[in-house]
View (cartoon, rainbow, N blue to C red):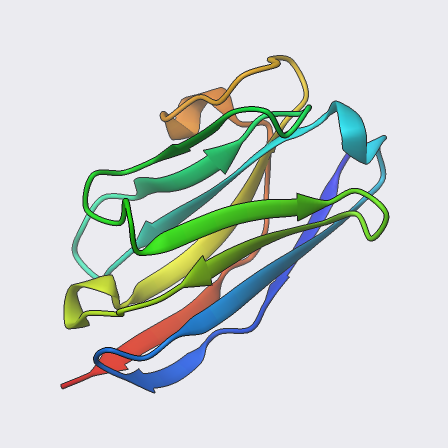
Length: 125
């Protein structure tokens, strides 16, 4: 079992920056691949970015590539999502997800075993 707790969401102006954090517990952190997903009202949950268990591989959705950066701090059992140049379309609830079966990064939510409760990000125009 893995427990995931997101933090760092809030209200920002378009063009601003925000860093989300996800603290994990309950299973060896270094064996987890981790990802961020987001879901806006009335829309499906979509992949944002992910990082492999080793940290050697990262993947991003085309819509955020170049603006968002995912990283992990194994000493703190935490994965981060640094978001820059935020746009109104980035407004959503952001979820942290963990996968213990695979060594790479999956872009489908069906590939993840554990989920946090989410943190709201609102980008104002």
